[in-house]
Length: 134
Image (cartoon, rainbow, N blue to C red; front, side):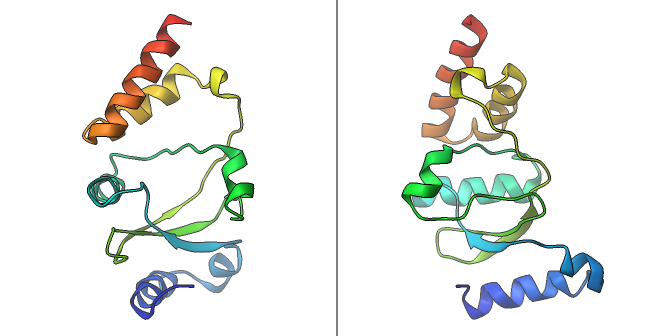
């Protein structure tokens, strides 16, 4: 459930769409990315700036956390750590693969996007190095 501020932010965006575009939205949610304040705020800023344009998750986590899996066309109100809306993103494509099959191209996108984030940058650099070695 969204707060009044989050809903008003979303409503301003939805008002820019025609009826057919609004009807085509299969799912809407509001969330922050990352598990700590600095990374959540940094990630939100990178998304808003257009630097971070891709994401990845473990499919099993959706079932464990009892959350719906993303769907193409879904809108997400990206929140900062204080739960304030920062921007709205739309899922345009979903691909499933095993971790070992993540492409070097995708890993490079993630590395570029989250390099400013201390923990994320280190993790993706190790992952990218592993991808280049395989």
